[in-house]
Image (cartoon, rainbow, N blue to C red; front, side, top):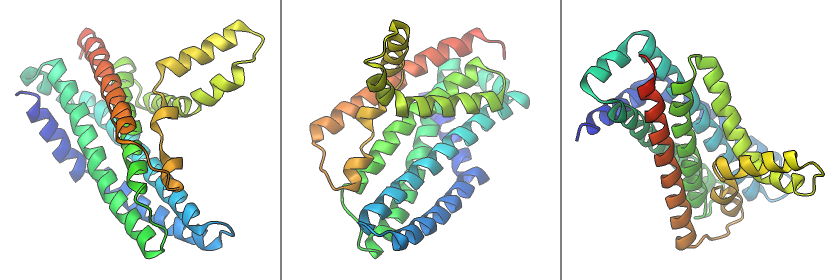
Length: 252
């Protein structure tokens, strides 16, 4: 299959680049901060450590996805590498390879950061097996962002604006459920319509995000995990087809 080659290239390039390892060392720094905060906390130290650990994993991985893949997409266009790739691969294979490679690199990063974070929690007696559930939900959340990176980059010619918009999509997805609840009693129909549209169009992080369950050791059923996994796969595939359609219609 032709799509394997661009996936492999993206994977090899993603792990070898400095951005990946800079983010790894930044995460290690955040782990040190989380340990310090755990020592200062007056309440449940274990819950504080798990909270900061999972938040550090998510924020560092989010930075990796947005900065690395936005920058790389425009760098390839600037140096005409995109034209070279498209002379060998179709737009569907090119975008599919970049998206597939990005998701695999994300998985590798979360595996490494999850291992280091779990080790810190074990050493401090704060580890719960549900931490793995929280890390998996972070993986699903950031798979959405991977798909949005290439969608936005295919639409816009500015790397800075693209990075900002992807970060804004992430933030809006986090807040859409709370916004829907707050505006449910609003007087103006337009406000309700906007909040409902954002809630149903953007990724449903309210259902996918399981960090709070991981922090307090609340188990999640296998059926529910399967449901949010299928939802994520469907959404990412849909974004992929939209991205390919947009990418094919633009000049490169």
